[in-house]
Image (cartoon, rainbow, N blue to C red; front, side, top):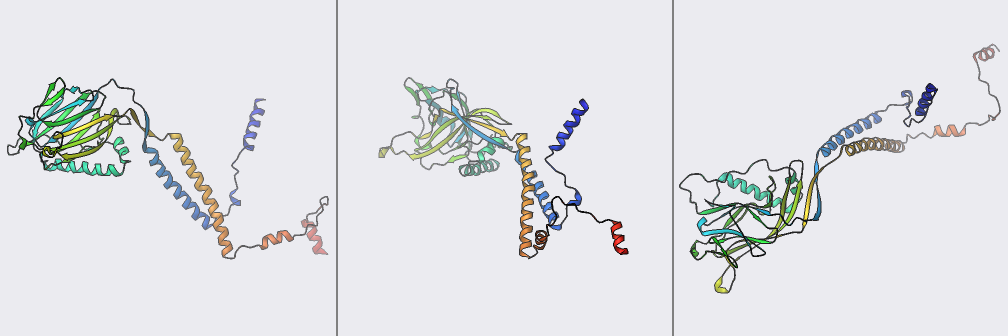
Length: 380
């Protein structure tokens, strides 16, 4: 019984064969068919090769949700150079509640405002990248996936005594509350005050004011290698001493999850404004560099995704099957058009089949001549 069941199963499988095999003796090979086959196989190989590169590539998926974390601290990473001596300027943060944040994490280093050749080359490279990012926003995906492999040149100054160390490099990090605030660099060191804070600007000569500055790096949150912030490589040169530079920053919390980096950072957008303060003309304000920031309540989740293997196989089968079907149909249509145009479409064959006599009755018996019948006819 088991053998009979197996035979029935095999018979059923044979009957369900959806791919009939045509004997080779029934197939006629032509030069045009061979050419079309070569073209089809070449296209299949090229498209399959390109599809493999698409399978290896990744893309970034952006999702938005409400940021519910308000209790943690926000880290501010600063690296900037001001064209004034370190003893004349001070940097600190004042949040929305008029609370002064300690700036113990910032370091003041006397440097020269002019960059050495290798550092200037790196600075120009960042400027070119910033220009392209303003036009091609899709480049940010590339920066998320692949960091800049080359590290920036060291900013430490050489021990050459001839260098004029008339500028001050302010670098380090601060931890602030997740509320709007104002990070500023102005004249004089900051001192605590019951009603806020103050700067000892009276001890600094007005002639030494020069807030020309260069922002090598400014970011919020965890530092991620390769991500270029909007204010990186920003350089402003002031001619007037009473100059106020203002940057209005909107911070967006970002969770970055790629195959190389998994971190919580904060991306931001910025608008700039600068003006000259003329107290004699009634202008109000303080000379300095002011970065007013606000934090968005939305969070962006950036995830790097990869094409699954099953989808790659389905696309590959679609390429092969589509080319087979399309080339077969095109070959038939082109062949028909060539026969019509060249007047080689022979209708006589079909006419002969139509004009054949149909005298044979359904119940009549027909005899097939044999060799004995042929010999008898010859003897007669």
